[in-house]
Each structure stands twice: as structure tokens, then as C-alpha cells.
Image (cartoon, rainbow over all chains, first blue to last red; front, side):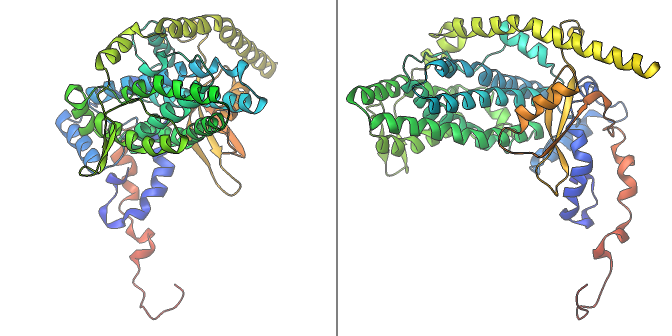
Length: 358
Length: 100
């Protein structure tokens, strides 16, 4: 919005203007999706492109009804949808422990956490809709396997220590990924990320605290924690995606400021962040090559098994089929609820109309 | 995309506005789907105020919002651009005049 303002007025007029007008722009009115894909006839595309490039170059946000290149829109829809799907599927590995949590306190925490994951999925679907995507269509795409979700949620959670390690590693990795996305060039995505990041920190801390508690317990419990660490470490490193030299879309996403750091940069950040936490906890990260590199000021670490990542992404992980089946069943079994609520709303509408007519 | 609307019990889209605390305006926080207004409010509470983020919620069907369109943006806002005298910095006041 600010760019339409005369330069002489200064930036202090930016805020109020954005509040009263920009907010309306971020709405997901049904027509925004259909109309925004076609540039207005009276303005030539090169001019619109230049305007878009300027906005990005000045670190300003693109808002839903702005003109944007089709590739930008497509990339964002894909990324936000995958992110949303990951949150929704991500409810399952931990959700399995809600009924088996060892205390009421842990049960309540887990409940709140899984509810947050659902909330994150919904914030993100909401953001995807501002780009013209249809929520029901996104759900179909997930259920039919036409859109992906994070590979990490295809690993099983056989022990309660897995709940702790997911909070510590998986949510920790998610924070590394998501904090920079709060500055993503697309406004609704960035704003959703701000909300998500605030909540994600509870997730990571509850996981770490759970593990600290187990480490103060019996030898058996300590072994359980170490076992979970051994199983989740490498898949967690894979969460950042393939290495930079094998990540063809990264450069464009960085240029569009959809992405702010490369996969390898974020992976390094996660390793550096996690090593001292592992020491405090008293567990060993299962990587013989892991050591501090004084010269680089970072930890060196081994190479994840990229063939495993490819395999899990393409559907052949330990739990892919189970996760998809569960999601599909939940959606199908919920159909009557959605229909009943719609029927009830229609009936109420009709009654109101009749009431006001009489 | 929109041909499924209504036929499979899809719920309409609502925009959600939350008053964070007394003394603040309601601010747009996002959207959600709900069958009717009442469900939209309870969903909005569950989705956007799980941690005391609000003391009041408004929901409104997205289709009921009138918005300035992109195409008319420049002329639409043009009247606000050329009245520099609406801003306090337009007026030169000597430095030695206090409290102004």
C-alpha cells in the first residue's frame, strides 16, 4: 500500500492506511481468486511485473489482490498447501498417544498440542485460499495423494519418548524453517507464520521438558529416550529438504523471497542449535562425524541418506499408507456432520426468511 | 474448483476479526469455514483465541465484504494524496513556540 503514497508524507502514514485499506485486501473474497489470475486489460503485463518486482525488491509484502506472476502464485499455493497438509497429518503420530499418556498432565498437554497442529493447518489453508485455492479441493488433493506433506510424519511413534523427541527435534526443525518465513514476501503466509511460531515454541519446550523428566527416571526410560533420538535424528535433518545442489526450485523461491534461507543453511542452524541441547539432556546424537569445526564456527555433520528421503516422499515410508488411510477415513466419516450442519443452517435461514415475511 | 460448492455440504467462508483487549479495534486475523454465524463464532474462538488473544470476535461472510478493487486503486485513493495540508508537518511553526 505504501508504495502508492506520495513520498513526501513519510512512512508514518503507512500504518493507518494499511489498517483501513490493506486489511480488506487480505480478504479471501470468492472473486479474488478468479479475477486476480487475469491482469486488468488496461495495464500491460510488463508494467505489472515491474511493479511486483519493485515491491519484492523493497521488502514489501505482496497482498492477495495484487497482480503476481502465475509461477509465484502456483509456487505459493503448493508450498502453503503442503505446509497445511503437514500440520494436519502431523496430528497423527502424537495423537496416537493421547489415550495412553502416562498422566493427566501429559494428556492435557498433548491434547493442546495436537489441537494447535490442527489450528496451524487451518491458518495455512486460510492463507492458501487468499491465492484462489479452494479448501475442499486442497483436502481432495491430499487425500488422493496429489499433494505432498512433510516426510517426517511417515515415521512411527512406538514409545512415549517419541512424543518428547518429536517436540524437541521436529518442532525445533519446524521453528528453524518457519521463523524466517515470518518475513516471507506473501503477506497472508507471513502473518500465519507469526501465529504458528508463537505457538510452536510451547511445542518444543514441552517435548524437551518431557525428555528431561524421562532422563531423570530409570535406566529403561533413559534407554527409551536414546532410542527415540537415534530413530528421529536423521529424518529430522531430512525435514529441511534435499541438499542445495539438488534443490532446483530453491533459487527462484529465494529470488521471490518466499524462502529466505537455503535448505543447507537451515539444516546447519538446526544442528548447531540442537547439539548443546543434546549435551544438557545427556543423549548422544547418532552421527560419528558430528564435531565442532572451529574454523567454520559451525558443527560438521554426516550426510543424511537422501535415497531414504526420496523413498519416503514418494510414498514408501514406514507409515505413509496408514497416515493417508486415516485421513481419508476421518474425512469420509465426517461427511454426514458437514452435510447435517449445512442442512441445519439452510433450515434456519429459511425459517428466518419466513419469519420476516410474515 | 467451485463446482463442489454446496453440493457436498461445503460451508461458506467467513472472515474473522478479533479485539485483542479493551481499548483496541477489532483486527482481521484470518478466515474459516462454517455452516452458519453461530458455528463461525465458536470456530473462530477455538481457532484464533486459544491463548487469550481476544475479548470480542466479529465474523462476517466473506461474500458480504465490499472491497476496493485493485483496478480502481490508484484513482480510488487519489483524493487522499494531494491534500498535504491535512498533515501537521505541513505547517511551519517557529521552534520557540512551546507545546505545539
